[in-house]
Amino acid sequence: MSPWGIPILLLIAIAGGYFGAKDLFFVPLAFGALLIGLVVLYYCLFKPLVGFYIVNIAGIFVFYPNHLLGRDLLPLSTALEILILFLFLGTFISKRSGDINKTGLFKTVVGIMLMLNMIYITIEVFNPNVIGISTWFGAFKRTLVFMLLFVIAYRVIDTIDKMRFFVKFWVLCSFIVAIYGCFQQWFGYLPMELNYILSTPGTFELLFQGGQLRKFSFLSDVVSFGVLAGSMAVFTIILAINTPNSARKYVLFFFALIMMLGMAYSGTRTTTIIVPVGLILYGFITIQNKATLITLFVGVMFAMGVLFVPIYSNPTLNRVRSTFDSKDESLNLRDINRHYIQPYLYQHPIGGGLGTTNSLGLYQHPYHPLAGFPTDSGLLKVGLELGWVGLIIWMLFQLSIFYQGIYYYFKIRNKELRLYMVMILCTLFPIIVAQYSQETVGQFPGGIFFFCCLSLMKRLLEFDESRVLKADGQLKML
Image 1 (cartoon, rainbow, N blue to C red):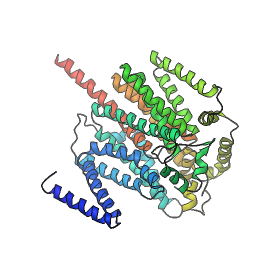
Image 2 (spheres, rainbow, N blue to C red):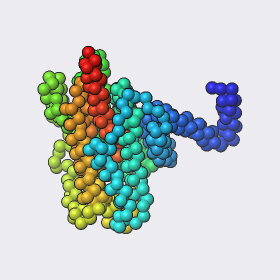
Image 3 (tube, helix red, strand yellow):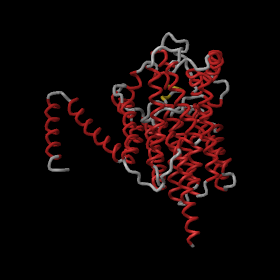
């Protein structure tokens, strides 16, 4: 809004109308995208906290425009990765506003293992079992982006108030994602979304299970939606348990219920274990808490109701129950595939190369022995593509998250900060466990939340140490 800005915007508007009248609709769209892009870049470079939440929101909705277009036309994931790079630069350009100014993020156990994993993936470019670097570059780029987010979150969330906002933001956004998934279940997919499903051969057959279509909300696929909804349900339940305000507590429990419904409507059976695993871990850590015991009891009763209530005509319930059916053909086929491919894993310590499995491998490397092999499991995919050496590094990275979270929880004294720590730990742990049968780490937006939380664990410890130091200083002055 300036003497020069308003005439320029008016001229752009007139030009846009002219090009639209001439059926050159893409020109005003490109102008609009350019203006929005410049504004977003400005915030990422000079107001990184705002840019950080723009990236988070973009991660949630990055796939939805293609759903509305009916096919994957826009490379928005790549645009988001570039935006994250600018945001990373912005955290160094902009002055820091918080009262915590410590370093050593990569001196933590998680930071060391994350860096080691990054180095190993970089070395994989020389893997002799694959020709070309196209698929390697895609995996390397995504790993680098998540490591940048690891640093970005640490730098921008530098006060306790910012941490509180981060928690509220993700609870609200996860509820919105879940409620839209419920909308798809209750009222059906939009026509554009059905066109998107039908545009890729085999997608409809994959989604149509038990007499209904599985739901993916705004996200890229049903697994990403199910994992996000289930893990954030754990996050929200723990927050609700420890919220003293009754009205806010009931709202949070309602949010968690909608998230669990969204998880069920995704039809991803692996996500069924996310909520119980997260709450069981919370019970082990806070067993002395009376509210924990009540929550576990209610959770067990709810689970027994879902599994044993005599309703057999509901496709969603039947899908959830099939998780525990040892005779399920799909589960048995996955076990057969694992045993079949194990000799290859043993014989290739550095793996067959990144991007050589599943449909991507079939498309990019049709000659490869792993091309088209359905890994299903995130751990099996790591083992086949990175070898048993890479699998060991990845497993140590996952264990370091569990170790650091437990250690920091018992080291932190402040009650609120301990709550945030246990929320993060009990949310990330079931995602790690679910890798046994699904690829649960690495997709937007769940990957953004996952890697941001890894660095925020250290921030929480620093917040607590800062408060302790201030309290000690006040005592000495007295």
